[in-house]
Every structure is written in structure tokens, then in C-alpha cells.
Length: 305
Image (cartoon, rainbow, N blue to C red; front, side):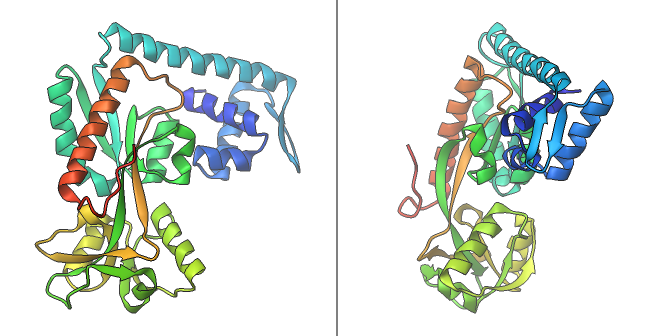
């Protein structure tokens, strides 16, 4: 068993259901079920009773759960103690970024870290929100900068900045207005993320509610690929305003309704934020706000308190 296994076990026991725990953990039910079976095989005991209503702990399972809770609490205490022992500043921090924000934030965050915490080394990893959630669960990340989707609500995310999605087009094509309604998107061949992404699911939900039939010409999960297709004039994209390259691309903010995305800072539930990490979060929050102010029009972007 490892720390992630302990955390999985705790969540399944809390919810009494593999399916509900899988939703909370941001993993598939099959992956969670497999992890539980592996724990039971490794320990040589049945941890859960299974029936049509869900799962419940066996007597052996209650012993295992108590041990898992103890391990999780011990690791949280250890992180806090180590943080404090380093004068309140960790020597190394692993930060997860979405590809859509990595290009914008990597250099500013590194520069801010060197200025405010010169003794700390930062490792940056990129991944979609689903991957960041998995890495937060596994304790592989100390901090993630990600969209405020349903999957991260259990991490008590700290909102940093809210921005709107824009319809982007090649600069050499027909000029776009400054604003475009959601219903008008049906007139444009779109390149858009697949349904595995929370942004796409939100767009689909709005389209259903509005009775709008979108013209999805291409699906692409890479912001780089979407931007390249847009710049080449092969499709129109729905992308964050900060991702619009004014040298090759023009854009119109989508309204009625707008499509908002909130950038959040999140940390693993398995650990307690020590003073050092809390200071880094405040520092990064300030820097991210500053970056977005430089790249987005204040009249269009809302900065939550």
C-alpha cells in the first residue's frame, strides 16, 4: 500500500460507494475498484462487503481504515514539520500547470519564486485538469494551477482570476465583431476540445440549454493545435483571451451567455499547508493576477476577492 491507496480507501469508506468515491477522487470507477482489489490482495483480507447498495467495511476493513487514517495524518504532520524546519520554506516544490496556462505562467512564476524564495527549487509538470487531479490525489504535486471545474472542488480551491472564452479566427479572414452571442457560434466551423475536457462539457451543456447546434469541424485537446488550425484559417476556436496571438489571430468575446473559466490554486488534501507553502501560494496568487492583468482587458475580466 502507498499513500494514494490509503487515501482511496478513506474516501470509499466515507462515501460507502465506489462510484461516488470515484467521482470525488476524479478517477474512473474501474480504476478505483482495481486499486481496492489490489489492496485486499496485498493484505490478504477483505476490506469491504459489496452489495447492490454500495460497500461497507468488514471487521478487518475497519482495522485497515484506522491504519490508513493514521498514515495519512502522519504524512500531513511530517509535511508540516519539514516545512517549519526549513525556516518556513520548502527546499523543493512541484507545481502542476495546464498546457493552456504553462506558456503564460512558467517564466513569471519561476521569476517570482527566485525573487521571494531564492532557496527553493521548482519542478513544473504539465497536464490536463484530470491529470492534475490524479497527481494531487497521489501526492505528486505540492500545488496546481488549474480550471475551477467540479473535479477540484474537494481540494478547497482558491480562485485567482476569472476570464472569458473568445471566438478566435485567423487575422487575414473576415473581421470579427468585438462581441458575439453564443447562438451565433452555430455559423462557424469550430475546432474544440474533446468531451473529456470540462470546458467542452460546459460548452455542450450551454448549447443544449440554448437549443444551439454547434458545427464541430475538428476536435483537438491541444491548445497549440487549436491555435495553429485557427491561425491557418482552417477553423474557428473557442480559447481563453490570453491565448489569442494578436499577430496571427483576431477574437470576439462570447456573450449571452458568456463562457467563464476560473483559474484556481489547489493543494493536495493529504497534506497540511505549512507556513512556507501558504506564503508561496500568496506570492503566486499575486503574480498570476498581475500576469492576467497584462494579457487581458480589465473591462472583460473579473478578479474575485
